[in-house]
Length: 298
Image 1 (cartoon, one colour):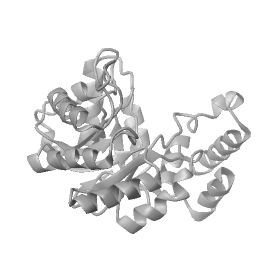
Image 2 (cartoon, one colour; image 1 turned 90 degrees about the horizontal axis):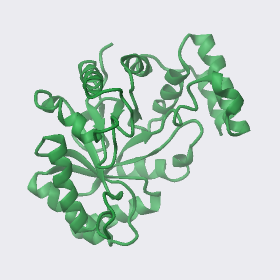
Image 3 (cartoon, rainbow, N blue to C red; image 1 turned 45 degrees about the vertical axis):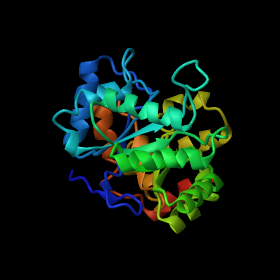
Image 4 (cartoon, one colour; image 1 turned 90 degrees about the vertical axis):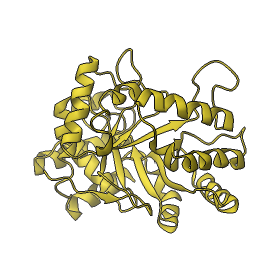
């Protein structure tokens, strides 16, 4: 398969439609985690999604693991990381204050063994810090070269709009992307965010495209948590049997069929999962199957 890259919002960078999510995975060893990352890079995955609180093995943070393979591959990939979530018990060990942002960027860069992040994301909206303070600090990181672009994660549409307005008023670097959950069981982005994405030319990263695994296995159908989930998984299984694709491939393909989604973030625990998920890219759901999933999940 030859990777097809897509433009990331209104920025000049191009990314693989599936990003490697390094959030709270549990690979068996550092060596295995490194092997899976390198395999994904060799297949053309060029966007890796981290955060300063994610772990990849039982003893190592995701940033540390990715950092071990960057020495020879840094120019091949784009890295995101995030700031806001607690990193300790102190009163300033969280949030998006200038203090916390400037401290955590250096910690992330140290763990990643690099001198810059490609995209630095505000991990959540911080009601205790003004957007002026947060965006001035993020703009300083762009100016100094520690960060190339900035974005946000888990913001509501009105919060994204407010951040864009604030950055414009400050003449600071604007957000270029949003990252939020989106899948067949969680379509809230369609209410307001998709319209904002189109209007402002933002890139979008859909995390949990497989609903934390609930969309991947019909064998778990008896323990699914509600009737909607049961109906969606049943329909996925039926379509998978008909077109000879896995449920995961179909669920990912459905997410990426939406023009407002730039990237789906997938977690890879094995080489087989890398192959399986990337195989969602070289075909498209036909309209009949797409409409069936659209109806059962709405």
